[in-house]
Image (cartoon, rainbow, N blue to C red; front, side, top):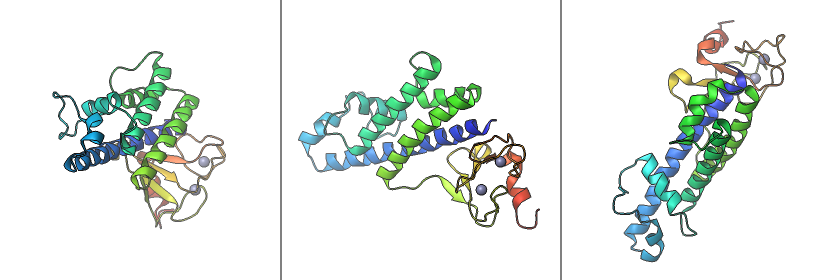
Length: 216
Ligand SMILES: [Zn+2]
Ligand SMILES: [Zn+2]
């Protein structure tokens, strides 16, 4: 897969995790306000009777948040709406029509068939929302550093990281200092060497095994 698609793929998984955490934070905040019996604030949040507010289910809760988005919603809900609008807009642009179901699922499904430029554009918008959500939640990014392994491109140790949001078989490794590929002459061993692209490797590319100390 082209590195731009791999980066976008990682970003989509990352925002999926951030969105799940926002849902949890929004529910916790809603429960806390309910416990305080602040009916004036809570009223706009209350799901209709058929809703199940104590059960974490993505679509009904997301629908409820969007339907009831008011000035009294928590910052978590406000961010969830913003994420949903961005993902819907991106999926609509990709599909040529409004997506059916979760726009994030649609983006993930169709991503492998997108052009690198389209994938790169999606990643930029998704990353912006992801970073804002994670800042609001007070959680870091999904990078798990690999301190003992040297980057085959920039030769620095301790700068590679696994992006952990995706399922294990879909995870990628990135260089956290953003070293850039110079194309076919590059020593990076990236699957598709591409001039001007930040390095990214799939786990299947054997980077970890080949780059481990003593493995050169
Ligand atoms: Zn590097
Ligand atoms: Zn390279």
